[in-house]
Amino acid sequence: MYYSKIEKIVEQIIGMEENPKLDSLKRHLHEIESEINNLARKEDAEIDDIVDRALELVKRNCNDNDSCSFYENNKDKIDREIRKELRGLQKGNS
Image (cartoon, rainbow, N blue to C red; front, side, top):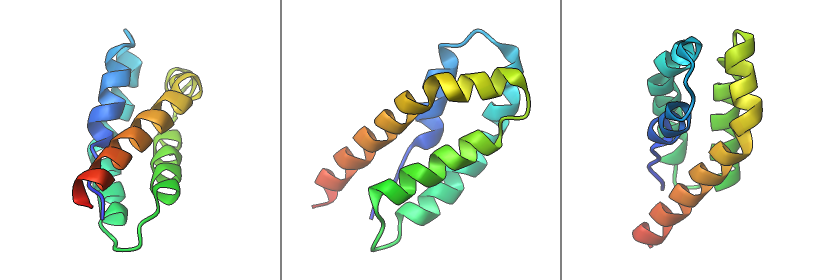
């Protein structure tokens, strides 16, 4: 089982961006984290599935050019940071 801090990870990356138009994505981060945590808590949770779903939810909240370009420019970093955190949590649970 995992417990992720996807909201924190994405907020840190957004924090590097000086664009108020990303506020709509920020508003959805808690919902995204909640859904991902439900997935991550399953006994047979796979990191790839968790990360794919997190990225899908972040991408789904692209509703303008700014948030979509943010996603495209940062999806690899978001993926990497989520995986790093989940692996650390996995080690802590074993």
